[in-house]
Image (cartoon, rainbow, N blue to C red; front, side, top):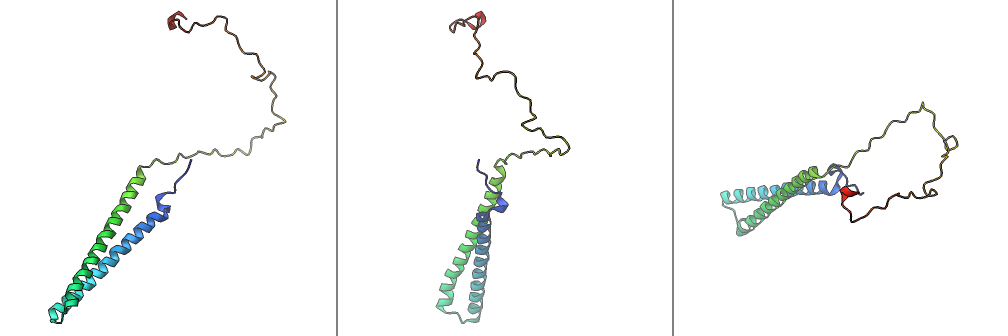
Length: 138
């Protein structure tokens, strides 16, 4: 029986969570930085075509990164929810050792007086059973 580690100990799960959070943070930084830069240059009247058109594309890239990070976080939450539905491994109960009782060794064990079942003769039925007869007639 193979056992899987608990979700808390799963490195790929935590990798997904960390990368998703980093993607959201990176996208948020890119988006807010570029929009702030565009706002400043547009209100000052010093905006160039590069600031306006490239800035929009970079801000859109930041939004895409935010969306991808949110999808990763939702995926991690879904995995966490599904892992709770998985049946847990049965817990084996181990009885405590009674150190006060005397241990029985192989030399002290009683020996059987009857022959083993393999050496005994097979039991023979007194009456043969008819397989086609009804059950009530047997």
